[in-house]
Length: 83
Image (cartoon, rainbow, N blue to C red; front, side, top):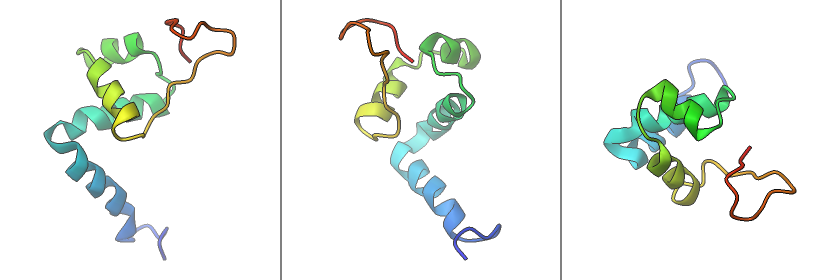
């Protein structure tokens, strides 16, 4: 019943995110959508959205734990190379 096309539970996650993210929720949803479509570099996101996304990415990672930064195995700890 939870996964039926018209289940009330399908919108619950989205509604909780909208409530938590506030008035900027559309920007967060756009960023998450880009990540889901393999646009994972900051420069790609900024060129598509036409605005800086650094603060949004940081909050999605640290405050909301919705994304995680993944570094290549041999990269330097403070290096700029991300995957």
